[in-house]
Structure formats: C-alpha cells, structure tokens
Image 1: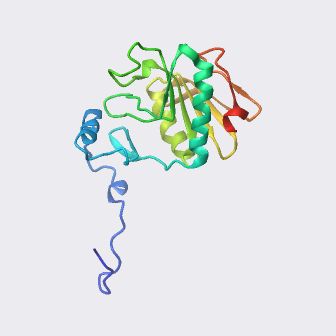
Image 2: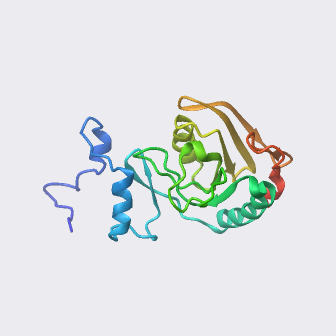
Image 3: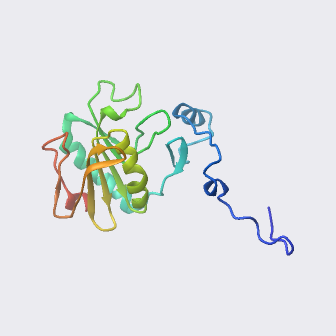
Length: 204
C-alpha cells in the first residue's frame, strides 16, 4: 500500500486513461464477456453490463426501485398478454460490443421464449429503465445507445420527480420524439396499442 512521502508528496491522481483518451484501448466483445462469466471471473454479484466494449458498474437497487419493478412487472404482463414477452432485468445484445441489461424489455413472441439466444434489437418492442440514482446515465448513455441500434421505443421512469420520459422514433444517436408524461398520464407503446399503463399506478 502506498503512503504519502514528505519528499515526494501525495500519490499521483488516478484516472490517467480518462485524461488521455488517445491511448489505444482493447474493448471486450460480447463473447469474451460471456466467457468471463463462464470461468468465474464475473459472477452474479458483479453488477455490470457491457457498453461499447467496456464494463460499466450498475447502480445498486434500493427498495423504491425494486418495488417499482415488482409492480410494473405485474402491470405489463396483464397489459401485454400473449402479444409480447415481458423480460425483467435480462440482457439484450445490441451488437458484438454492447449487451446492456435494462430493467424491462417487451419482446416479440418467440416459441423458445429466448432460451436459444439473447434477443436482438429487431425483436424488441419496448425498453424501460427505472431511474432512481441512474437518471443521468440512462439519459446520457443508455438513450443514445438504444436509439443508435434502432430500439423503437424507450421509457425512462424518473422516480425522483414522478414522470416518465417517452422516447420514440430512433434517429441517429437520439429519438425524434421525446416527451415527458406526468403522474396523471397514461402510457401506451406504439407497437402494442391498447396495452395501457397508468403512470400513477406505475409510481405507486
């Protein structure tokens, strides 16, 4: 362990790679990421997701977040029925270097229920992120990532202020339409007409 020395001063500041983005990096692939799990380098206790070849730590889950997930799971299953597969906190493989784990994806029905392979963007009807402490990350990183890969619709549930960002029409690194729906509103996915969710009920 390094200690401060009276002559040399405090240890050097960390974050050298961040301050020097020109240094060549070697990103992970999804296959390598999975292999790290298979051999025990990563375990279920390591709350990370693969974003553009880098491991990103996921925010801890508090009771407000987990309770919202529990309630919305019940509401989505009831609203969607057999028209989609409600997948909770499971991965979506966007490409060979990105495999995020959104709080919810609603997927096109598939006979194997996605046992044979991880869903890809063209199989995703809706992505939902629940944001307690992760709002900045969900808006600045997840939103452009999903848009870039053609995810048709994204909801970001902002628990702090009690509203939902509804993002539709992926266009480059963002969505053509971004609106915010308050507690009095009702949510209805474009690709699942009639599958309505009350924002007030979602927020509890």
